[in-house]
Length: 348
Length: 287
Image (cartoon, rainbow over all chains, first blue to last red; front, side):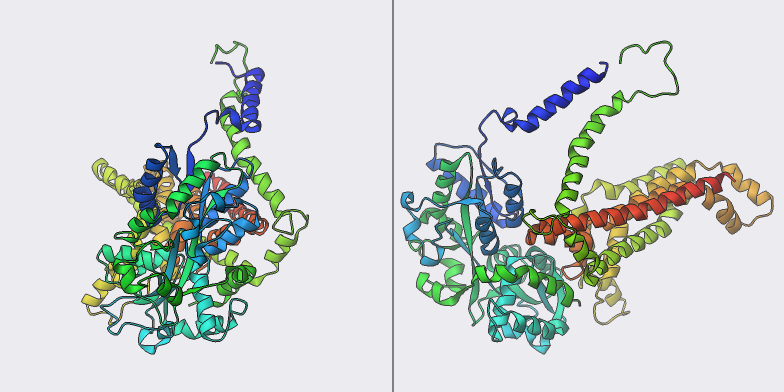
């Protein structure tokens, strides 16, 4: 083949046309794309939610595309008119960002069969919460003989150089800092006391992990003995034989709503709705509550059982009483300033 | 390709074969880079107001400059470690039997055959409190309490040096292989000792390989997001993590774009220093 100006032009024009009319390369309708979280969430959704959805919807084609909340937002933002994702899963902070940037559609509440059964905190008209994430204290029972009972225990001198935390990039890190601030008289609007408390925690700090997943490695390596931690992540470690235990501190375990949203301009709106419905059913939520997943349900028709009933709450009434929900609207207003401050102040 | 015309000028080259890659670069590298530059020239996150605010913010902020400085320093440290450890291996490679050569090349290449994530996790296992180093030192009675190796600058440098080592060793092996072994003998027979021969003959002639290896290692070390964050932890902030934090967690794209451009320019500056050295060394080697 001789490459001359004409053939080059043809190639360039073809590439240009494909860019200008993306429909050309996507002639076929794409399957429903659900951006779940990576790791245990992906495993749980692949094993339980996807089969339930496909069974209820005549084997409709769907794809899991696991990624972090913030990456989901970035991806949808980059192609608002033709989003590559149909259903997003979000922690409370990113959920507000996604709503603020007009990336999600209101959930068709009146059409939904399960929305009204969700406990009040989970009813979000822009995207309901099918699951809770719970943050409490995680410790190594082989090194820590008396189980901790309060966030304040992290400051005990016996844990010198044994405490792990994560930075504020994660929901866990930010939510935990707010809780510490509250314990010392602060609030979502004022985390100064939290930063002061962090300053005092420095002698005890063994590590500031870059993300909650890295905390798990630190427990495995014996690098830390105690840390704030995510209930689900701990259960996975425990199942793999790592000596870790979870306790809800007496101040209350921090509960994050994990909300699920239909992406604006999704070409698969109807299927997206059906997938979310499947996530809200008592059947799916019950299966996900049982081992090995142990995901905290939000549908009030689900009877709590197993490890969740033992460690967290026996029913939704107790759950509401023992869980602390935070005001993420307030948190988001100042979060970037906190991240900057954390970057500067926390050096160990 | 069709038959070339007989009268074709042999000193000119057809650009046709390079065109696909050139187009690919235009579409997927140059265009996004321009977009990045465009985005970085806005003062607000929505990208409506033009201005140099993001650059001013970075360049007047001691903290941000500190992050840039520590990243560039990290690269220098890793490059130095790789050079000091890699050069003897490359030198040895040229002086052993072919069988051993195969083994050396295999050992050098082995790290490239496993994923960076796996190699990094291996380093977490090695450097941890109950890791191999601490366990050995403790059982030998040299230390009582485990040393803190993970989440330190030292840990990051060591892990990165191992991860990026092939990028240094391979160009060195090639460069040393091009040196005529007779030069060694000539130098010795003219009365130079082995150190003098090394510094006056071998080292200058291998400079092009040194420069190439340093450039590759340096560029790879400062942008190694995975190793930096996993071995360095959350409180050691380097440019890639800073960039990720601003772009992804804070959704502050214009500032993130400005950080990338500044980082890019800083790296280009360092690389051009290397290239200038390379050009000078060619003159030196020929002299």
